[in-house]
Length: 419
Image 1 (cartoon, rainbow, N blue to C red):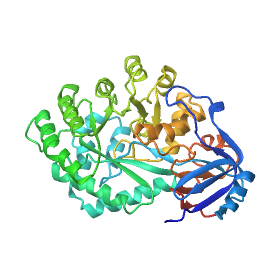
Image 2: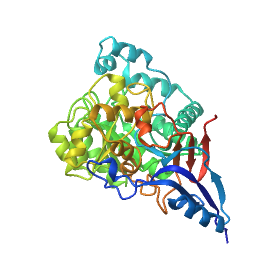
Image 3: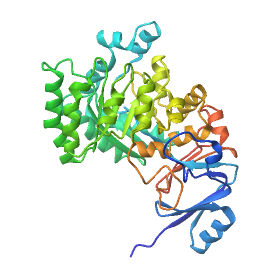
């Protein structure tokens, strides 16, 4: 019989648990459950208890727990969950960025040979090992910035063989990392320029040849699609979603980035999330508020493209659920700093600390269909981060320049900043 291992971490000046928060709607900071002079007792890779330091320390000593003493003012909270990234890629799109800042639009650059297709070309030319190394390097930086779970998409292969190469690279990179990678097949990113058939023929090929292989090899249980001008229309993508559902895939949608239509499709197909939403109107906001689809704002794309932010304030006030993700990708969102982007979104959209921080923890977990993380409470994964501050409001006040000093994944300390 395996003996249980206990660890106690504390005292923290503040512990934000995110317990008992509603999944939907606006949040006031007073709704946050905060322990002052608190501690966290771990049982193996799970949280056993969160509470007052003195009481938990006595319990930990009785259990012969390892004691990890926090000797300076620090605030603990759940590890960040980045629910939308594209960190499996090769190449750079610095040229695209320069052209956009000189006045060219995203679609104009794509038609001229830049955009997604430029990254597809570089990614196809990369070896699987090169892709693995790139994922590990980027994910490690995300981990050091507080993300303990990262969603990672394919979508720069756009053939059965190349999409499998990307998904295999994500799977192998995950085995090299201390954090979790959640893979998503985005083969429906755009119609490949070297494909001679129609959009419908391409999607049928992907559905019949790629998706069964992904299931067989257990490379992902999620699919995504870019519903937009220059990518896929509502009409062309519908049968693909139906086939994916039949195979047991969860659905998420790149929706309303430049024009509307994607949100309506996401709601119709009961997607887990609708991501982007920069072009969403009151109609789309109402659809999301009345559905179980979680809205994911991607402020990194706004900063990279110089466009509007997703209407985060309106979404929350309407009763929708809002997560926030980095969209880390080589084209429209190269920064990849989730905390900075979330803080900036909060400033522009007038979001409370509770709304922003819930959007990158507990509500982000829900956007990925994960019920075991995003909260510091008994039975949840011991994924937590700590900041050198005694006041949680300082975290967003510094707009991302205050980074976590310590990061734990499944109870193990995986990062500690040097003094």
